Length: 325
Ligand SMILES: [Zn+2]
Image (cartoon, rainbow, N blue to C red):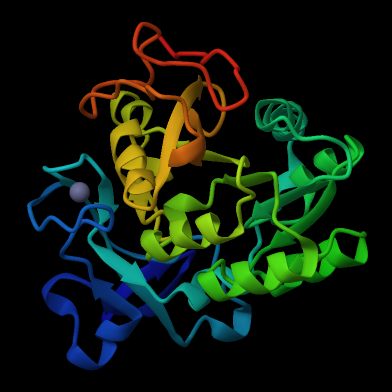
């Protein structure tokens, strides 16, 4: 325990991190010593923000004298595939079961979701009546955009408060973490989605292989997965250190995303970049490898932004790729 400053009062922080972690406490913030995409152990540390409490975990007045969880907040990058990840993983139930961030609070993001729904539907060749699934659907904002376009929708989100609100508003939402088991049960109940979206969730996921495998279980044979994540190169170039917090386990470029999909029989076939969303965001389009274009993106190391127009072929629906710069 160390004394720390919280607002205008001193409180005690229970520290999980660095040399201060006691064995009995390590379960709440365990060390992550291998790349969660490729498994390599050559992780190079590059940013250390010290030991901090969890973001968005506000204390009540009654909690002020109590011990507050805190953990090391530091970043490392995989020398093999380019994935950047935190050194420590905090117990996910502490961060996600009662979630305070609500998607529909900003006009910019509402407009972004409307555009995303129309684009995803077009790329997947989906029609009214087909299923759309949003993983980590939050309050159902994106799914409401798909529904406005005539698609049938369902969501999955571990935040019980948000899942219940969305369900009441007519967007069925499973209050669980996305997994193989949930994928099987949800698609048995609703049908296999032609469009699967996962926006601003992959960075929160510790077991990326379970997550991606579950997508493969759910996705319709010629379906399309659309992933949006904050973009590692914008993060580094613009020094966005204030976007580092314990929820954001991973920081992605195109190459580790492509490698992750490849390992699960999926193929990344297009990339777009949105500099104005969350400090810089990339949107990647993914299909099953067997329905992917003959030549997918020519992605070279982490310094590459995305598809090269000369090497990328058209998507599974015949759509020409929209390469980033
Ligand atoms: Zn790696």
